[in-house]
Length: 213
Image (tube, rainbow, N blue to C red; front, side, top):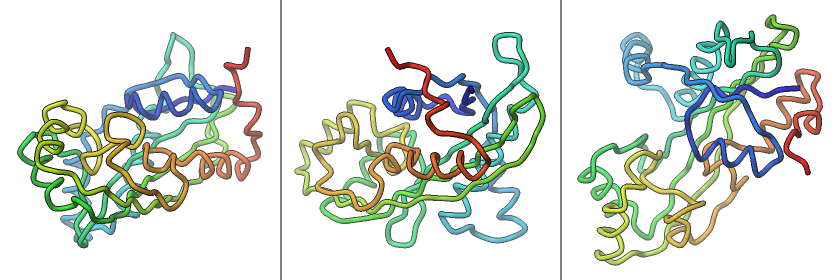
């Protein structure tokens, strides 16, 4: 049974590989900012948990007509998204060094919530048989960094393309004192939540293992 990952995130890919799954990755091509602006123009600002679910579902549904490797999708399709919440404000990817630097000075030595959204579509047999999804949250407690550490981390480029301007599984790991919740949530995908969704849709988690040996 195959898992199709509607994401180009290296962190999510590596996380699944470490869990014994080599997914088929497909770029969803979703304009996230435009979609959020469109929805919020009607509904107003979205809470973090709704925002990540909205984008996770959009990404999963965007690849249903794809034929990776020249073959139609036959398996489970996963979309995911992440956002960091601190002081009531949602922080996605900073993209620019000055924004990453500003965020680190604001969250230095403090705590915030990393929300990851999940949307799983059962597309076994080449047709949609069902879908399920929900967000997961983990509380992240940051160490107190000095100005030199913040500057070096920003200059590494790593914080620019990750929600909240930090990682827990790479250069940013030593700057995290503690994580409350499923630690894989902070990487961008809660493995325990994904397993539950697979089972809810009638699948077996261990049937997704395809990298053993």
